Image (cartoon, rainbow, N blue to C red):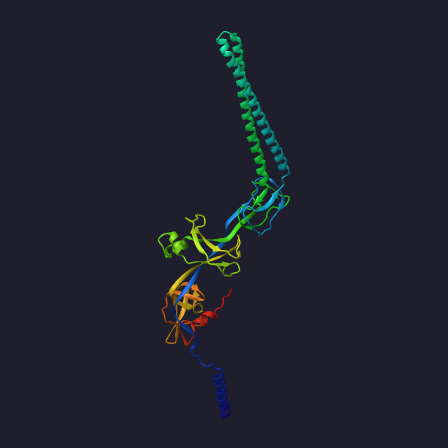
Length: 409
């Protein structure tokens, strides 16, 4: 019995020793990186999708119907105003022009003949008048009978009527010349229209019709487009709320004055690079579109290197300046049920607090309220602690934390 009691005691001591060996040591406060809330001057951006167009875009269309016989330019080529771009078939027009030119010649011959007839008729009038003048005193002296004078007077009247007819014929011939010239000029204009020229100086776009295509002024699709891309217009839209906020915050009494006071804007290209030239907001449409509930702005961008072209897309960035704003690294925040939280560190304890975020710029949150300058907050690893947890603060450089944040996408 005594031996059994000794064995039982040894067994209990062994179990207790094993439990003590397996027990985990008590954990101390969690070491966390911390930063203090700071005041900084920060520039954020409002970004809007934009469509880009040339300053002037002119459709190239035929003024007459015909088949294209020559394409004199290529897509993407710079052309000058008046430069020939396409030629249309003109065989029938050339024949019509020759006939019209011959008609002008014939009409001028008719005028010359009419002028000769007028001169001849006028000569006959003069001769008849001489005869009347010669016979009248003889009749008055009863040397000859009155019948001869009456005959001479009738000849004079007939000659005068012939002059009137000749003059009318000349006028008709002159009208024929004008008509023939107008016909010739019309045919000549059509021949000129067979050469389709650049309406403005710019870059030729896609060529929709080539050799052998029948084109005309009524075609729904233009032959091509010429775009003046020396300056580009970027169009973007704001919704009604954004527009009202813009009117409220922009300096100036009127919309044109507010636009003049706006800082220059940037253009983010499709490859996410910032276009090197700054743009200026030039105008805004006068009313809200009832279908989309938006209002459109137009921004002018210089294009000295012809990098941009008609039809490009991008995003316009409007700068928004925050002076002396409260800021924290984005890594110091977390969201839950639509609210943004931070962990404030006081007396080595992390306590969650709600903040209102005004904007997010360059891996920083701009705080509207909920935190004060100088308050210490957990800067990293906020998902690994809970409110009320004891912590061991380890201060870190604010900019080091911000620059270490990498975008996910």
